[in-house]
Image 1: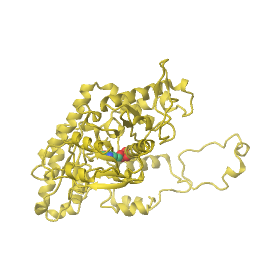
Image 2: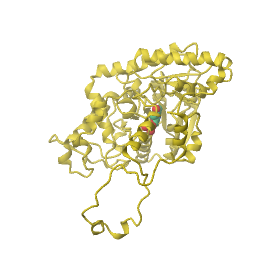
Image 3: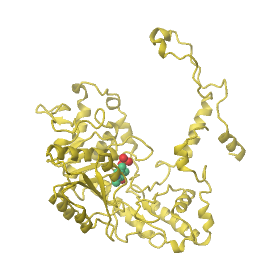
Image 4: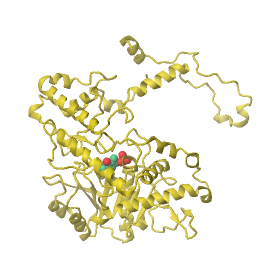
Length: 483
Ligand SMILES: *Cc1c(COP(=O)(O)O)cnc(C)c1O
């Protein structure tokens, strides 16, 4: 496309008065017969006037400016951007699922309820917890649900002085935000030199004021809390609950059951871990599980199996904290997760998870010379790397990320977690081939070379993208939605 055409397309609205894609016949009926006068339009709405071809080209070209999983490797850390089979999309769109009315009588939606019940059972099996609710609409919503469940638990025990939630500095950013939103004082604790919870710092922070200790496992530097059992014992010794943020459970399926190491409440991200994409603002699902002691306080309804073998949402949960979402959750995401878990047996799920860990470690080792891991140790599902400032000629992580776009890769998560300076958080997932991992590492090694010999090239990146560096904050605060 010539530059002139491109810039003129960017600078004018595309609508031309009188252009049409479809012409509809005048309706036979009179709308005013059916629609109350106050709802009738007085003037014609100002819609863009375009031919069908112009419309198709507009959206096709817009979509081509995107990076997506279907077009590119997308190693966005803490997002588990793995390939999700299209078959699951087709299953979730089946008429019997997609067109169910939320108020449909239970007898008519037994299939959907059975699926939800079995999914709850699967989640119990892989975590060892006593019960799961499928209601929360995303990971962060699951966290809020979990912390409010803990709140309801302590309220029932008349344990009113527990006003604090302890959150280590390696937690996902949503953890302190959730605790604050749930009305708790957030107590931050610093990690030890190995990037894991410092047991002494935890001990010092724990007291009879502690309601919950909230741990992201694996934590945001990609490490497993090897002292998790001791942590759980310390938390329980002061009468508090241990919450696990299990959004990154892709690292652990089949290898560890959180209930076995003392977790009382946790959420999973069905998107990310079980076949639905994360990012892009699509629907998610953040089921929350709890131990037998805490389960009665989970939100209702939870699907139950009756003595007759049917499924119901009418079970009594007198101590439940109530509802966290209208109806039952984002069922289309649950269907995908169910299909995923039905397709693979337990051993395969474990292999999937171990392959995700292997990919991240392979990446870490491939990049050792150019971008070393901040904590030099085997990682779980993602590796957190940093730059070698003395060798980079003023090139920053943000420049490296932009330059990766020129090489045809989506950038990893950058500048997160906050405790790692100039962080590059790479989560390759198990669905990428060895060739792809090596191609990505090679691109990063080239960028490292460029930083030494032609740093301006990296600082000016991207060079071959439809837009260069954008003011992301400005775009969010003052969106200009004109073409
Ligand atoms: C992604 C993520 C979340 C938040 O999940 P959303 O579905 O985006 O709300 C929470 N914790 C961790 C560790 C995550 O990776």
